[in-house]
Image 1 (cartoon, rainbow, N blue to C red):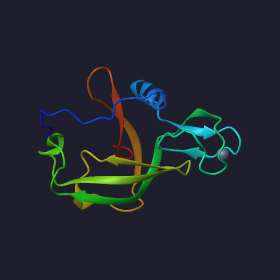
Image 2 (image 1 turned 90 degrees about the horizontal axis):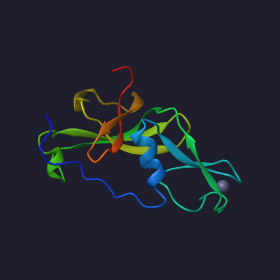
Image 3 (image 1 turned 90 degrees about the vertical axis):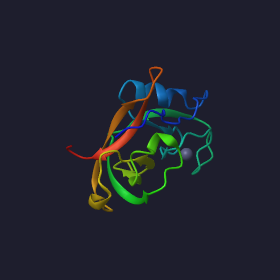
Length: 138
Ligand code: ZN
């Protein structure tokens, strides 16, 4: 059950705004380095591989698997107060980069490393959406 508190979100910055804009359109994107082609997430100005400052946004499939996870019993924010215990997972996308997501609707008894997941987009007010992962095919 959802609580009435709103999901805490980082305010967009000039660097992250296109990520949020894509999410509002149900698209998942990450930066791809123009020089070496490496994808990266979270957004940052410089490639951690080759230090290039040149990059573009690349669209991702939204498919991946659980790389690791934790089960939260005491929510750190009122948004999750009626959800505990709930899963927070590190997702390894099929493109090779990782993102962190809570997993609403996934019973902690059913979570497993390697579980196939896919992205969905949860409306969170003011026209914004946030990418949230769920078990694939559900
Ligand atoms: Zn690079």
